[in-house]
Length: 147
Length: 201
Ligand SMILES: [Zn+2]
Image 1 (cartoon, helix red, strand yellow):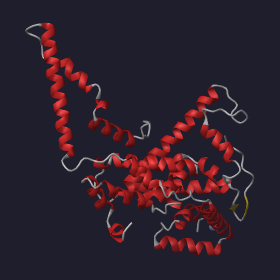
Image 2 (tube, rainbow over the protein chains, first blue to last red; image 1 turned 90 degrees about the vertical axis):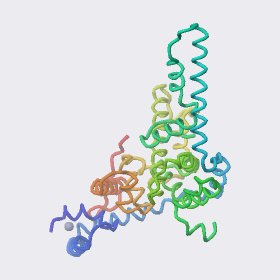
Image 3 (cartoon, helix red, strand yellow; image 1 turned 45 degrees about the vertical axis):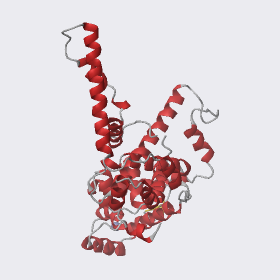
Image 4 (cartoon, rainbow over the protein chains, first blue to last red; image 1 turned 180 degrees about the vertical axis):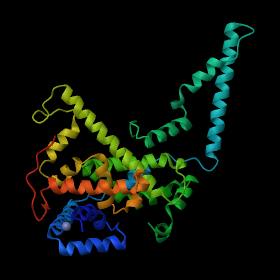
């Protein structure tokens, strides 16, 4: 039996991740091999040391602090309402832009393209898109500030 | 927390919160806060800072609850968020240290107000064990895998759900992390004492 192979498996064995057959192989080898027994003793000692490190003290007010800072979520249908509000803002700005352009350029003004883009370029002002961006950041490991 | 709350699944509670019963979110916080704080503490090597990051984790989770796809794996979801926030904190801390070095400050001697992490490290010197310092010297991947295994008692499969890594990769990371720690903590190796490790900085 190969000590190198066993050494590679000792950690998984310790973590309870080896199947029964491989576990038996390790156990049998350890009985006969003082060198691997030494390695195994080292792993056990390490585990004990790691668990000796004191955990953070319990924080009994954590839940209360978080709860105090939550913004209540709108009741069911809230997302629909927000979408409607978003559409209304969008329409208002578009129409506003159109009227403004029409007023400035007199008759025959082109479509209000500038107004659309000015809305789309600043998504952070609108809750829906902002939350979504944050979320993507999160899973890209993005660096946006946490709070 | 009532008995009823303890019996409810994470996903049931998420649905309830999303339906507007915000108070129910507290059940999830109480269910996970100790583990999330411990996880962050071991990842960043700082018990005190871990509490405030844990708080941010729960705020972030709440904000993004509508995007959680319910598949009975809220635990993986919340640990993913905690992992990202811990790694972001480490990145910020490293940037601050680099920035301070660029300014030519001698951090080991002169206190430098804009560098709280490094100062904390100095203050901690006494009370913080050698172990935390050694944990922080592992690669981020090794530390993540080891912390989930040793302190959260995750199986390799559960670690895969949080990290997206294959089980063989997780196996290797954990095994190497242990070897490295064993060596650096001068624990028994081959039946004897390992030689005094060279300090790597
Ligand atoms: Zn052997």
